[in-house]
Image 1 (cartoon, rainbow, N blue to C red):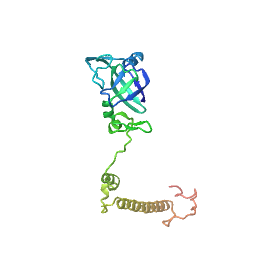
Image 2: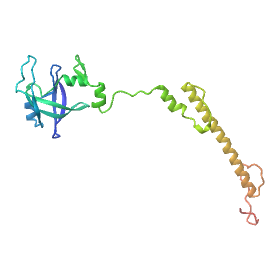
Image 3: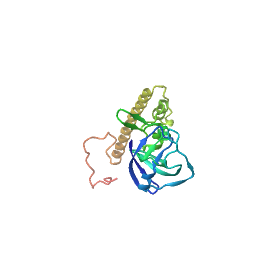
Image 4: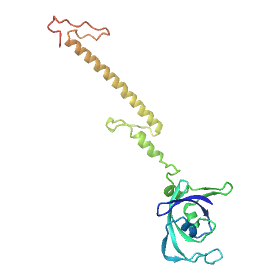
Length: 222
């Protein structure tokens, strides 16, 4: 027996138990339990006969009604149709069709039921316990070989991903050094331009602050 929660067509929730029975040909709900819990039932277009193990018909005659419910077992959820019959000793029976569909792993010693088949991972569980794999070739192409910009027009000859990565790092370092040199040259040019405009000559800028011109000179301000 396992603990389950069902929600009928009316939206009402019911906590109950279910019996896993590989000898049952369908999934069933006890007629008396459904009526007492006021679970909405739908009438079948064609009644169905249900036979017991010895070939005799179950008590109550053919199945004339069933219930469409939302069944929850911990985080495992599904919509299922339960045929209404007289059971007596359990509210719900999950039979062979349910066992085949979900293929549960049953721990007979510890009385556990694990639901993590491929079907459950895709349809019944909120998130799959499996991780999707990606071929190494695609990862290498995406994160390493496409790193350099095409307009830089430089080639990578290595085929090993780590060598490719090292090549990219070296290229970045080289670009960084070039940028620093270019910035230093640009700053020097600005200093020389300012000194020429203010009448201090073209000598390299000094770390000490040069004296400012006085207001008496005509070229005091630029």
